Amino acid sequence: MDRWACVDAFSFPLQILLSLHPEWIDDPVAVLDRDHSRGRLTHLNRHARSARLHRGMRYGQALALLPDLRADTIDEALRDERSEKIARTLSEFSPRIERDDDHPGIFWLDASGLETLYGQWQQWVEPLRKRLREDHKIYVCVVIGFSRFGTFAIARATRSSGAFESAASERRAAGAVSLRQLDLKPSLLQLTRRLGIDTVDEFLALPAEGIQRRFGDEAFRLYRRARGDLRAPSTAFHASEEPSQTDHLDHAERDTNRLLFRIKRLLHRLLSTLEKEGEKLTRLVLTLHRDDGDSIHDEISPAEPTLDILLLLDLLRLRLETLPISSGITDIELKAHGEQTTTEQMSLFADHSHRDIDAANRALARLRAEFGDDAVLQVTPRPGHLPESRFDLERLDELRLPDASATSGPGPAIRRFFPSPIHLQTPPDTPIRAGPHTISGGWWIRQIHRDYHLLTTDDHRLLWVFYDHRRKRWYLHGEF
Image (tube, rainbow, N blue to C red; front, top):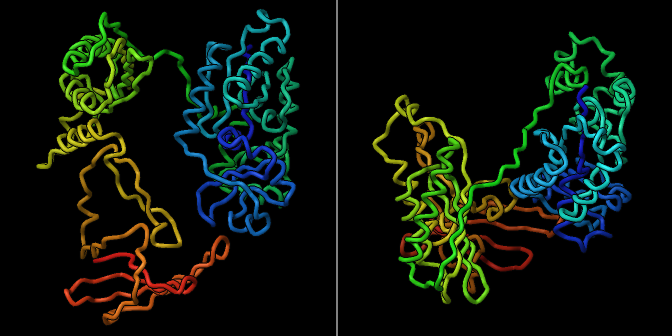
């Protein structure tokens, strides 16, 4: 019979946040779903819970109850990066690793046959937990059993590690787990609570034919997973190393053209390796070791996955011209990151446009190669109370052709927006064209009261200004 070990990095986002801010360890700390007063608390430490804060509470409400609350968001990219590193470490303890797609921080390890190698489960689990604690500052509990759902439910209900000797004992323990400990939606928990249903066994006692209709899709998936009819969505982890090449130079080199010639040979081998694996290059990491002991680390990303060596060499040439090669280079390292790609034959069925979007993406890739990855940005809307809080500048990785249906109707007025309002030394003396449009609020952090106006200047410019009642000053915020 198969044996599975569920590794639960409990409150995974909170553990990541505390590893980034170890000075917060004795303070009340919470993780937010978004950095806004209306953002909700998703994970809390013991100090925050003892102050009557709870999951789902608004950030502004929590600050009113606990002004010294420490809170921040966790970027999904950082969370996935930490998860990848943990999975790589776990691969040293089991040949088969899976990550739960719905619950970050949950991993399943194939533990079949390990009892014959270690005798007692503690001899396998304790080194695993110690390794994660020392290398990643992550605390986990490990539950060894016979099913993915059973070990998952028990791990969510306890922070103690252990092993079940029989499938029946695991089923009994999993059936006694409260639904509140399985990260279900508050609406579903509220409904089951009204019906007097608290545990997994009580939920499974309901008639199957009415679950989806009465409780919804999420409850039906949970029902099927608990019965063993449906596997949790998971991703298998493969610990294969990214292909890399190194070159030791006999003499320290400063000339970028000769360096590029040496890099070309390494790049040709890397692309051959990727081609054999059915992959294309998505990111190339370049490390140059200097003769003074320092190293230069950089990377380039083509506009789309490619095996075109001439394109990559052109991007490398642009990047080398910007690198600080003040002393000679003695060693070159290249590491390629690739992905599986489909055949280009599918492009025969795609719609074609007069705009060459691929050429535009290649141009942006050249800009990133020469000026850095943050050289190409795009404006992304986000919820916010103030105008300057309603957008972010994020990296633009790829251009896409516009949707013609989105351009129908009159075009919007184009406004030159100043992220930081400019203080006007003297009040405007030009006629007010429109206003006031009042924005008031911010009581949860800092009181805000602004009256916005549109002004027409003598040279026919249209200005967007506001009067700040708290500071008693006029500011210029934009220009049409």
